[in-house]
Amino acid sequence: MFGRIAHRYDLLNRVLSLGCDVSWRRAVSQRVAAARPALVLDVCTGTGDLALAIGDGLVVGADFCLPMLDLAKKKIADRGRRLPLCAADALHLPFSDGSADVVTVAFGARNFSDLGAGLAELARALRPGGLLLVLEFSRPRGPLAPILGWWARNVPPRIGRMMSGDSEAYSYLPASVSTFADSAEMCRNLTAAGLDHVRARPMTGGVVTLYEGVRP
Image 1 (cartoon, rainbow, N blue to C red):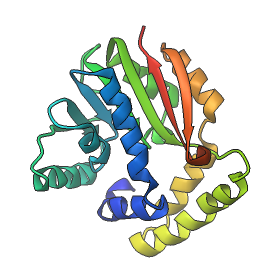
Image 2: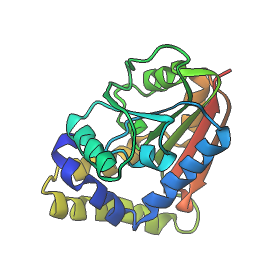
Image 3: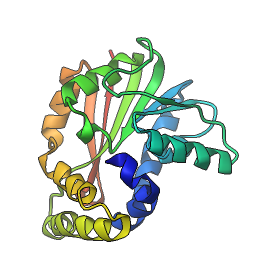
């Protein structure tokens, strides 16, 4: 499914988020920079937007979708950047224990076939004291929740079908948000994966949440 929509993925991200996806990734990259890592592993890197936002020389991008990685490779080359990529299943990463100072995943966790196993695998790849950052869609709360919820349920499927020609993908994507763990449950899952100092930071009225945890 992700392979079929790869050619329209970046454009639809901008359109459907009204450009907010850029600021969301910037928030992650700033948090990464504050950790001063020597090596970052960006899992579910897709077309490489978050990895590129983090910067050259310290990030490796991994994804299981080859058409997405092909686009990431071209984007990296077009920008004259240096950023290694690898094909990898997030539940079975080809990295040894404690490989990375920071592990990031943006809008990929809700697609894990087993959320608990996936988070545990991300934690395994962290060195002791390393930081896990998970950026994911969440269900809005507060006074704008009805409007934002209506948008998420109705607009992405219609615009996604029109621009990508793939009705399945852009029905699945908003539906996956409605069934994904809420903030409290996600924090419990991160704790169960063995992480400390777990917290959740909602952004844009709770449309997305940035979760973090530290490997003891």
